[in-house]
Image 1: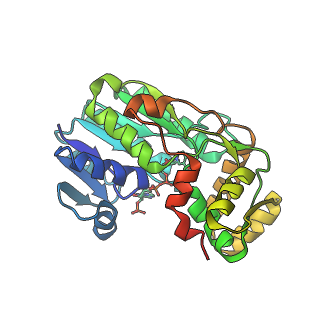
Image 2: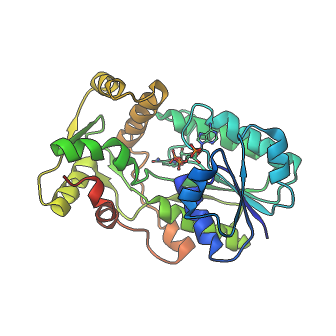
Image 3: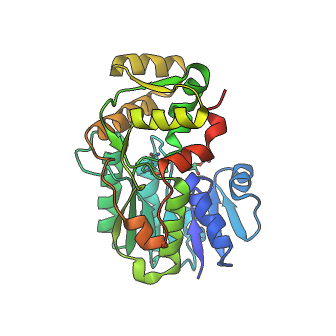
Length: 289
Ligand SMILES: NC(=O)c1ccc[n+]([C@@H]2O[C@H](COP(=O)([O-])OP(=O)(O)OC[C@H]3O[C@@H](n4cnc5c(N)ncnc54)[C@H](OP(=O)(O)O)[C@@H]3O)[C@@H](O)[C@H]2O)c1
């Protein structure tokens, strides 16, 4: 069985490739930068890496040759919808037997998060393509906090956002990779849509309290207005599209779209997903002074 993993240096994709390498499955990967891919994979042993842009139809056709299953997860990027649809079209043309698509739990057509709307559009395209598929819809990644909160927490002990009441059933990308590996390895798990969450839904204030306990100093989450957030992110050089994504994620959180807790991860991988305290402890140096 050959597994194709485009955008292999993504956090979930690289974890999947590392996990499958241990199963001695032939893995073919696509990346736009070989060095970054090798860094993400911890070397290229056991993975055939092809390098090129994801909109290169000839490269996709070649990469999809004799592949049994693929895992699709282009990162948050203004071209994500276009690139994922192009991959799905290439997969349909190549009669790919199965595609696992990473989506998001706030995937609804009128999602308050633009990324939720992108995924709804891509999921529809996948359904119409006729490619047999499995959809993974995870909640908020723990690693978001490394980008959105850690620098501010390190410097000032607090961070800002626009979601004072929303709850988040945070999940580690590593646990999502484990689920994807289970679907690759067990055909009986395929053909479903899975909502993947951590074991508890916490407010950002509760997450701040856990971090404070782990760090031994007071950490707070403070509410700002969308305008204040836009200004602060622009001053840090955050690209405009990502400013709107960040505000959209907060709107989704506030609307409760990341708050459900499912037992799906444990059912699929036979162990509970890591809880917030364990995950934050794992990343503690990023928050510590
Ligand atoms: N973060 C969350 O809380 C969350 C929650 C639920 C679902 N998701 C979904 O999870 C998926 C992964 O998200 P992420 O932002 O965390 O991604 P990521 O793991 O950072 O992965 C990004 C990958 O996509 C590639 N990529 C991005 N733009 C590209 C382009 N224009 N052309 C070619 N490759 C490109 C990157 O390649 P390079 O390394 O070359 O840049 C990298 O390999 C997304 O679909 C997101 O919606 C995220």
